[in-house]
Length: 253
Image (cartoon, rainbow, N blue to C red; front, side, top):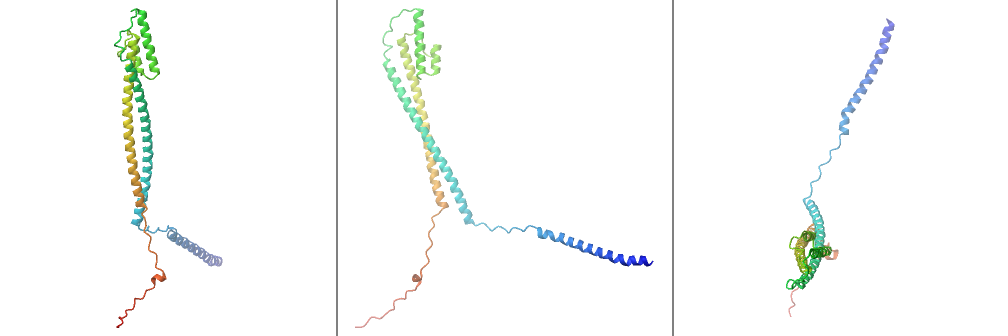
């Protein structure tokens, strides 16, 4: 009985002490967990300051000026390319006119060929075969010189479109000269149309480049206005008040 009472008196206070320590630790941990979110909660960013309308307008003007400047530079490059294309078309037109003028002069030289009687030659199959060979050879040479198109050459070999291999070579030469002249005339007309189209494109591109350049200059002026210098502060000498002139009565004589 004494042993049991002794164990009770010794072990109970020890258990109470242990439980007290555990309770204190538990309360401390609970307090830490409850207070931690408040400490770990990210600080709320302060509200951004209200934007200044003047600053925003200045930024918009600078952005617009940069965009217009880029567009103006691109338009200038386009205008240069269109002008170069027009110069190329103009050179092609000059060459087409020269070729047509030469073909016209050659056709005029043969204009009297039909008035002269054709040379008398025997009407034999060999003669007609020789005339056909001459026509084919002359047409091929003209095609190689760029005077006949491939379509016209095909017409020559197919004996269509006014090409008659039975004609005398003198008459065939007249027909060939006229065909070359007509082809050069058509080429000249096409070159005229291309040159006019290139000129219109160059004019439109130049006008667009001029308009964008003017707008870019105006936008740059708006984005970077000329600031009037602030008046300089008055110096000490300038700030000194000049005493008013003392009025004196006129001296009586």
